[in-house]
Length: 231
Image (cartoon, rainbow, N blue to C red; front, side, top):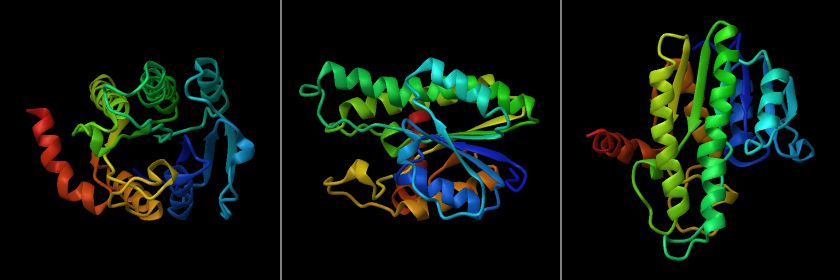
């Protein structure tokens, strides 16, 4: 996908990987970027000459998603990055945390993809990139709610890939490993820098990859896990 003539929308752009994705897209030549956040006042200064347009967006709110699709009607690239990581195993996680994880990590991604697919198609085609996780392919028991929601989101992503085939809207599944952001603060793991992960994702979008393993851990483990998941 050529990025120099595209218009991007990144959800969860206020910090972590989302912030890095906005910067990486600007560096790659995207001329216009919508930065989605529940509170646009919390968006950082991206330090870019590229216009970055704040967009109030809570992906758990269907009305806000619909307004975003109407307001950002020029989008050709949607990156579904917003996510939530509750801690706790299946026996300790609360029902509310499980519901919230599903609402954000599955339902929010579904809402956004469904709302923006017609927008992107009407604009001549483009891509939807769902930021999933290696956890989508391999359960991590201490993160039971996240594991369940991300695995379901991977299944939904495959459905979108099938449903949107032939429309000019490609659907990309991204499976990062640990990233050094607030989400994994205090969790002992190998973590890649969000800037390097974002740069790898943007390069993969430009290549037209359908599946992306954007860091050393995911590149080493992901292809085998993906093959097992499809068997």
